[in-house]
Image (tube, rainbow, N blue to C red):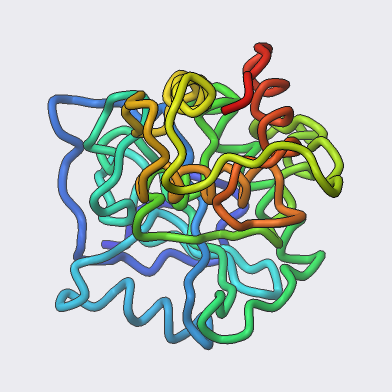
Length: 254
């Protein structure tokens, strides 16, 4: 028997075999947004329902805004992979995953259509209202897996979602020429301060004071979400000030 959809917004329920109970009785308190990174929504649906793929998600939203549910919200879907947030590493057990169909960076990375964004907004609002998910727990796949993932990417409209009551947004500091830039190979208290604020927000990053590859990956993920005008993994003044605004704290220079 096909399960009943958890949301009245669902168009169809196509059960995926790639599920299991949430571990240790964990209740979902995190909403994770992805893009499919495939050329068609139907192709993504088939992959997410293929037992050989070992992946699944709770919802898929196609480019026309149609919503398909594949996993009941009470169950653990396999969408986050190796990931962490705020010290927690079993992101699949604490999250609900939404795949938003977009071909992704590998296939030209198109814009997200208005009808699709309306559906994303409506479904997110429905989920967070039922599960009381905090704004800072609405995240990108790239936030929890910065070394592996870039989705849903810098074209995704996080500002729009936050204005509707989904997630957090602060207005990014405008890009400017000049100013100090922290980059790979740098060391010092300035780097340590940036790392500490990224870690305090939830990113999995040690405060070593050394600007290593991991730091660059996390900065890139932060930029995709909060400073999308330029995604380069470098801490320029715009990135530094935007991070400080998000955390309500000043960030020093290197």
